Amino acid sequence: MKKVYLGITLLALFSFVAVVSANNLAFYSGPTNPGWISDKAVQENVKVIKDDPGIKSLFDNIEDFGDGDEVGDASPLAKWTVEHTGNGQQDVIILACGTCPSGLYEFPNKDADGSNVENFIEAGNIVINVADWIFYMSYEGGVRSPNNGPSGAANVFDIPGLTFANRVGNMKPTDLGKEFIPSMKAFNSDRPWHVEQFKGSDWDLVIFGEADKNNADPAVAISKSPGKDGTGMIAAMWQSAKPEWPDKPDIRGIGVVEFINNWLSDNAAFDVEAKNKLATTWGSIKQVR
Image (cartoon, rainbow, N blue to C red; front, side):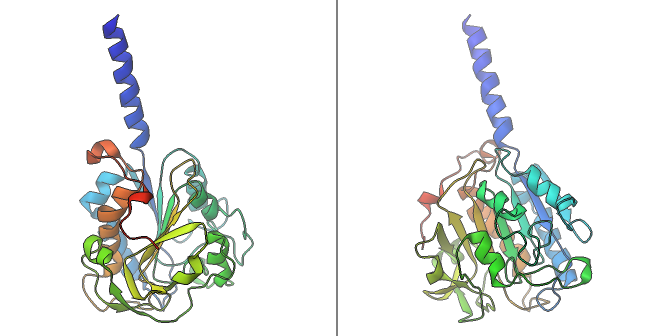
């Protein structure tokens, strides 16, 4: 009889491991707003991220959606997002081109509340944006869409008046930046986080680069209201108008790799068995604003 109970216990344990090890990653790789990041740079950065051994070990499945995959709720990207919302696992979308297509958020602000991307985040998943102003507009089909403008980010974050407009941009790595994104150097951000606008919101900010106490980039916002899939997070990183990054390697590729491997892997509900450690909660983060 004891052997039967042991078998049931082990079966339950392995079933749990199977459930928690199914994190998936999706890229949206363009088209781009060409004044901010080139299509060539996006493809190179996506390859750097996809080919990294640490990234491969964290995600069971990695998909790359590009032009033609992103238009409307019937698109492959939209369907992926809906399928990965409320499924009990924490998944990641990387907006490698800095634009937000209609499959995630219908422009201009037709999905002001309850968009696919907002539902995805509120369920406890993660979005990482590089280059252009997060959720501002789309370039699907190679043509600039009507702008969501600042309201795109304000609606997804649920912070009225939120903006990433140009302000103080001379970013330098914080102590957290030096620790978790060691390749990061000083740079100019054209679309910094306005830190003071997050005070009293439903988000805590973890800051990896800053110009002063109210201007940051890169940073990640962590929801105070966990969902079914985990704790929702939104990262905006290197929002700078540079079609080609002046330094090599392009920080927008290797920096995302370092952010995921060094910080996110410890603060998200990723595969605990494969990494041989328990995921920590956002409450254990060393520097929060």
